[in-house]
Image (tube, rainbow, N blue to C red; front, side, top):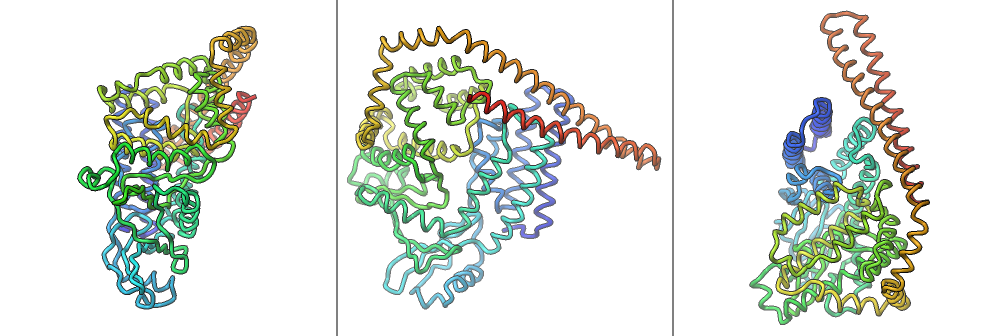
Length: 540
């Protein structure tokens, strides 16, 4: 790492955060136009990018995590960090050798014929080296970087301070971002990556899960040589799915490879349990025989049984075009905020499903992506943090599939795989058939009549809820704004009192500053309790 000194790391990160927050408040007080805000967020993104490349460590991981939150963060900021790669210079071999011998309690010659002293991969947390065991077996040795635990611990302390500051002293975008949840999600992910015993167990889990699927290959692990800081795996070579020339040597067609990839990932997305959360082209290879090879199980997500049930309901609702049920599933999953209007969301879903995907090849995909992000930010939608990595996994694999079979229709490729999976689900397929029956005209009439009869009471409740939400939210935001202005004036007064050496001005300003901080804190606490109540009220 370039900067290991704890005080230096903390001061650089905290000073960056302080400057950013003060700039945001300055722009709010001066009511800057949208164009100026976009320029500001672009500058903030560049400064953050430069800082993380200077300090490395956990900051790169944070940048990668934030780059997935296009639903919450300004696009000008996201554009500066969305292409971050977790690649840093490797450590000195002498430090790595010391770690290996300490972990194994023996010299390297006791277990290995040879170990290459140059890392074949080097990231912010770990490095990978190639070795040959005494029996001639080639293995991959994944070892944590020297001092990484101490560096990450320091970065988490700094991040906790920043999160507290954001949570209590900064206006919340869209009024419903939970910074504490984002922090816990990130901390959980990093802590999992820091403990290689978790990755060891995850590899064994996936080997067992796909043991009956001949078209997939999961590397084996050497448990006797693996520790919390070292992971020894089978050395597996393959061809990247983005390697045009290499794929020509594989005796399997590109469409077949795309479908094999779907067979591997579709169950991970639709069934409860663990899923591979980082399936970039470097972690998905294909063997010379055409088997899909999965590598690097450090970043893993997990779907609960409740989430799985709601996801299946959501898919069935889309297939049967039952959009009211789809909206209900989105509410249950936590994607829609309290102010979301069900009918508006239903119309948007209907337009999305009716979209002609055959025209994708003729469209500007970057423009479509930008429009979708703008739409999400404009709507009362917030992707729950537990689904961030699931969405990342899906989007990445979808991109690989489209590059594998650009001339094929994605829905045509996926349909047989989905039906095959559905047939294995037992009673779930009857649920799907029932959803399809409900989508027929006679049931549509029934649903329309029911909704019509319930509409007056429903509209009354929604109107009352929305009025309360808008009124109370405005009160809290105005109070916070007034307290911040008082805080800002207090800071100016303290500076003036110090400069003129006038104790009365200094004491009055200091007292006003403390009152402003206390008032801001109390208002923030009340606002958060109220927002939690509104979330629960909306689900009743």
